[in-house]
Length: 123
Length: 111
Image (tube, rainbow over all chains, first blue to last red):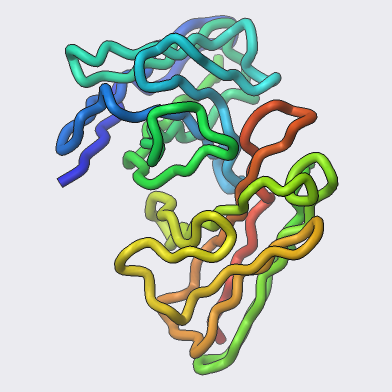
């Protein structure tokens, strides 16, 4: 059974940093591209970042470029999102999402979603 | 503002047919990029509903169908059921943004 379990969320002050982790099981993480998608409270889905199967290709939405870094450790079956210079606009549930393909396909095809982890940026 | 425009809300009675539109432009749907649809039930995580414009993953009822024409795409639900009450999102790729994009979402209410 495919499982994606996010961790590392919580409350952080504006300007602070936080790292999200996503532990994958039930499939070979090393064979698939992965994504982060967020959803602000009561709002729609927003695409955040992507990484191909081996980590040598990444993508960032303009809203997080230069502040967020996506990475993966296939040996640990784990995806990461390092977030810095956080603002209130980054408050959201962050979903770890599996792609059907190993490359950064156009468009991405999100065939399995984690349960999400809430990140709250507030003083 | 989403580059893919969906109606914020729609409603229908049980058994009826509803169609949710997703209007894009020449830099996304109109450029030939595929459209995917996701269903998010209340309090739940999104689930892939339709991929590559019209294909249903295993386990998705054939009451759900997708289509694409020009710069827009549509999700049709026939024989509406109470359990179809959810938020629906379209998703594609935008060449101007060089990344995937979502529509703003449509909240479907079953009367």
